[in-house]
Image (cartoon, each protein chain N blue to C red):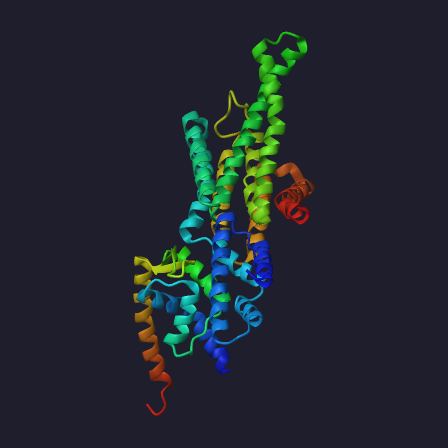
Amino acid sequence: MSSETARYVRQLRAHLRLGDELEAEFLREIEGHVEDRVAALTASGVPATRAQHLALQGFGRPQALAHLMRQVHQTATWAEALLGAVPYALIAILLAFHLWTLPWMTVSVAGMVAIVTLYGLWLGRPAWFYPWAGAALMLPVFAGYAAYAVLDTQVPALAAGTATAWEKLGVAGASLYFPVGFVVVAASVLVAVRRDWLDASVLLSPLPLALVFVIALHRSGGLLTPESSLGGIAPLLAGVSLCAAAAMCFFLRTSTRSLRVATLVVSALLLLSTATLLADPSGGLVLLGSRCVMLLAFLLSPALVARHA
Amino acid sequence: MKSGYLTQLLKGNTDVLILSLLEREPMYGHQIMEELSAASSGFFKVSEGTLYPALYRLAREGLIRGRWAKLPTGQERKFYTLTRKGEERLDDCRSTWSGFAAAMNLVTSRGG
């Protein structure tokens, strides 16, 4: 491979962000094509250096070609878009019909989310993967609440010196969970950012919903005596999840990047505002505004990470 | 004006041209470009920057399938073949094109 081709391939690779396997295959194909084109041009009498230049000229700027290739792979088919919306729809069903209180149901859904996420990972992170991975990341948040519940009940016994060995072990495990959970979430975001920060934002987008659920659960009796309607907030969260499913479907079908960013941000802000106003009408505009700013900072934080990575 | 009109026409029909070529035999990227030019007596020239995104889009839609195979020279190239879905799409496009071309001729022909 000539140095000009090597430079082009290097620049193309830097902008592709399609995933290792797909990138390697595409670049291999491009290199083969350049070989063929150079051979054809030199056979017709074009000098070798000029032939190299002409062969690469047809591909256009590496940034432009990478953009076109990304558009091909980022725009989901209808089937993929609907599959990407399924995690939010599942959450809506669990909440609307109070199915989340049935342990076998929540375990089955959690298992399904984990399996589909791993399958998506195996396929090389297709367009529908990130909403599922985001739903999978809700699991560490729920586990974090369980760890908090353990600390809440066992720490007083530990402080009083009456804790058993098992209780001490529980406190140690629960304390360790938080840094481990944080590392899992941060590592997932960093991996997603390497391809595209917008993927990482999609990954993070279900987490505010999980946080609202956990807070509502805590206020309505906690893990051991939960109230199935979550103090009346469950139907509201179900509605928000259903709207988020529709927004995700639209997001995945959209090929224009600015429209994708707008869909993600506007839908999150609208849903948060509606949920806050309905669930906590006495909160006031200042509280609503500060929550919106926090949500915006949270969702767009991967862009900042990508800039400094 | 002429080149702009042709560019627009070509842009809208690149997929059909690729599918039509692959109906004849499996081909790889460079071969598709050469065959397209040869089959149209040099009229159609698709750049690499248009061809590869189109090939990957068609593959993603399940209309064509790519497989690596060796050339007689020992070099490996990715050969694309038409799928059953691709054949059906091509048939649809052909009948739409015949209707479109016939209607265009009726309207644009002089002294009809």
